[in-house]
Image (cartoon, rainbow, N blue to C red):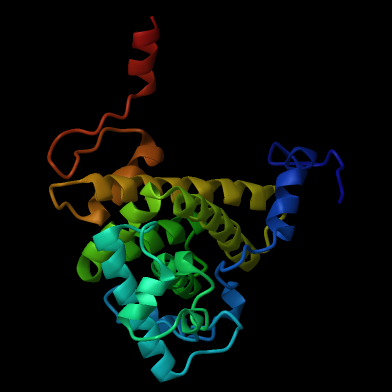
Length: 278
């Protein structure tokens, strides 16, 4: 790798070399989403959450695409598992119990999933694919930040309209289960790298700008996750989009924004912070 002291826009290439090596060479974790280029879909048909979104090409652990019957049975497995997770908790639910509920053996389970955690993370794979398809549909006139923000807001609208209870339950389950929480953070990190590769590749960015883009995407991702956590903890049934909008506004300009409840969200300004120190 070239570790010369060449600078571009004030960013020393040598300082960013290790991070960029990660961006270009990090292998996907088992179960991580496929690359954008592998999506065999018509992105234009899924531009917004107001258009029906249907996952395609779901594969089994061996890499084979499921038949319509297998997809239907897989959906049933997920539904049964979710009921047991809700009733008994994730850790207390066994694969044997899930399969007993559908009249099949444990061996059949592993034809559809690598493990119990894959059942819980099916929703994340689905939402990641939604974001991929949305990003592929965006015009080159948009900045990467604009595209990412719009993608997450569209995803929030979709969850508010169609899957509110399911996503809330699964998000809480994952965040409160140590093993699942660790995988959640790992997969989001992998998605940040994937989004950077795609959006940066469309614009033929150099290493310095790719590093800057990855930092921006990390900030957008963090804001989305903060909004998601606030939404899960919110007992007033406010929309996910409201919390995501507040989170985005916080890093955009640091100004106070009204919370969905009508109470202000505390985002201290530099002036106020300075007064406190003095």
